[in-house]
Image (cartoon, rainbow, N blue to C red; front, top):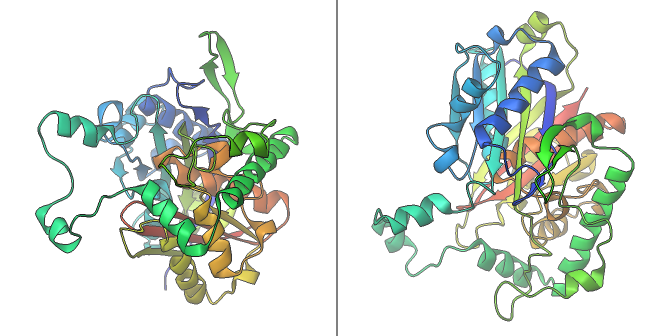
Length: 391
């Protein structure tokens, strides 16, 4: 009999724009701040933490040499707390939650932190690959991959465009979806919705003066359709723009995951229970379409229909992804990314999985809802799906 996995604490930093208010934060320190806050919010004795599983995508420079362990060493946690850094591309910290949940469900551990971090300012996207190529160390496409996928140019931008074309989405459709993301996020900020889930940090403004960073920096409350529609396409003749794609972002997020024994040790009430976990792979060339079939598989395994789910967080890597997901699942748009998504709030690659889960848990509980589903597209044609039950 497998045990249960409970989430007892969930926190995130507010997203910082690339080169924005979090630009002076070393990513290990950024992640450490979240680990420390999980301890504060849960009241746990940190000696009880048996592992920290940290998602991070660009594992080079300041995010190299296991940023997970470095975050522990930069935190107030004792040296006895181990850590590991994992890369499942954009799903890295969603996978961190899966691994943490699997450990406590199996009973091999009772208390595990799942977290993620990415400073896209200080370790720009793709820099480990770019710098390795410049140093003459070669790239990640092997002769075996080339034989199986001859002549493929691996590009998420091409993939996002291909999905838009396949599902019949126009530039206007995607720009209107993007505007909606900003408007939902602006309303959420105005209503103070995110306050309980955000750890306020010391940041800097454009001039370098100290400011409290407690609000997602990328949200444009004054965004207009005309403004988004006026942006240049990333590829000549294409419909994908910086306006209808996720924003580069600095951020970290974390979740404290325990089983029944861990709950008894902590003496706290859980926020949510992990109900179902699926990971799935398919065509790595169209790359970003896996959440559609992955969600169908997860629902089938859980014995649920899409109508049983109260809220969905589908990462807005590009507008075409959640749009295709809605269409394929015949899902209710009113339940999707109700406080906006990565187009407005930013996508701190390795931190996004834990970030979305933090937002989903808080949204379910504040609205008195039961089931939430989170999924995201990931490089290599992968998708994680997590179904939780708010408690």
